[in-house]
Image 1 (tube, rainbow, N blue to C red):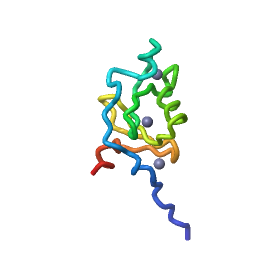
Image 2: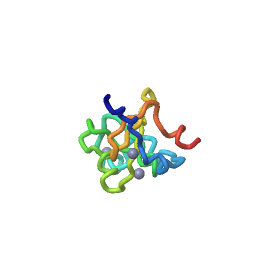
Image 3: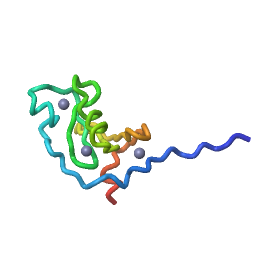
Image 4: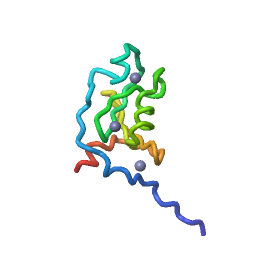
Length: 101
Ligand SMILES: [Zn+2]
Ligand SMILES: [Zn+2]
Ligand SMILES: [Zn+2]
């Protein structure tokens, strides 16, 4: 008999805060430096908004490395998903509202 693999679980949902995007108009660092981004990601611990990994500066991932805030979700209006950098886990729908319940 094969062992049943347990569902992968993220243990970081308790780090999700009721965040408001700090820079809803775009990537926080790129707005400062005059650079640009492709898609936006929202940090669920502090509300940092940063560019995705297709963006030249990858500020969302850089924010994880400097802050150790593990969870982001997409900040694109048409997208509803999240990501844990530590567990490398994909969430759909995005975890913010669920984690705050
Ligand atoms: Zn996690
Ligand atoms: Zn940026
Ligand atoms: Zn953050």
